[in-house]
View 1 (tube, rainbow, N blue to C red):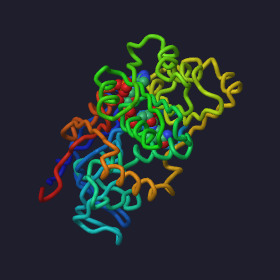
View 2: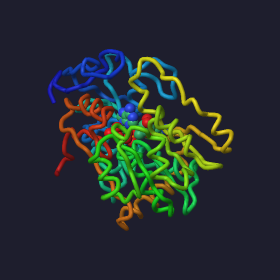
View 3: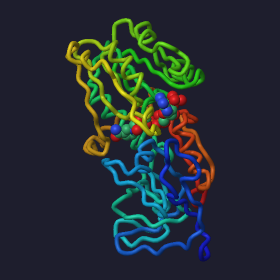
Length: 340
Ligand code: NAP
């Protein structure tokens, strides 16, 4: 690759409300040279994830904001072109944090070699961070028991689609909500959810939940917050558990909406809400990978991916994911592996 021909997508401006393409700058840059402990990686696939919206804000968080004028970075898969680390060699395929560049330098400690016998792109979804989030959030925090009812919002997305299916594997009744009728059909007809509804058209979510969860909700896996959370609280059973995974309905709001107004119901119902961050649960990686590889091989767990093609499309993919254009994991195909 010649001087200044390496497509790089930089963080261009802080969004005010919804992210749009003006938040990104496309630039051709020279390929950087890795220093000790670093790798030069050719990007193959990039993941776009909701937490990246949090990195486009100066609000205090568990992960620092993107820097204006620097490449955006996200989860990705790439091929090592040059290694300044004894742990990797040229030709290794790695998964971890990559800059949004055709060829980028990353710290060797931010990546690991891919699992050789697992599908590549699945390692950013069902076998990657979103899958682990579903696994620890549902099993370790939600602690579902056979026969209980699990409700998950954002149910057709990367995390939610796995939560509902893991709930079924645990012997629970699984109910989900999503933003289109096609997604609702996908949940019931393809993933085996017991029931689902379109939160955008349903009207009264509290009433719909009462109808679809007649024995009440024992575990609510919350991906969205807002009105759905309040509607669920009215339907919780005594001793219900609510793993708070994320609140995507608020990520692009300029002012936080009030509520939920009914937290007293948690007291009455002796229910428990618990926030969690997947990066605190790395110790569960081995169990997660073993179980999920097994469920996939047995055909008990299905997963979908939605692709954008080309690095230049990565901002569109991120915006599209925040707007609900994905079924399952939203990914960007940047290049094919060498020899494919
Ligand atoms: P995803 O569900 O694959 O994609 C985001 C989805 O959010 C969209 O497809 C859209 O689907 C839905 N959405 C957008 N705006 C919404 C709104 N106002 N109300 C309801 N749904 C809305 O994303 P993901 O990666 O699986 O993440 C899901 C949630 O988990 C997010 O809240 C994320 O921040 C959180 N998360 C947390 C952790 C952690 O460690 N705690 C780790 C990973 C992810 P619809 O068409 O259904 O609207």
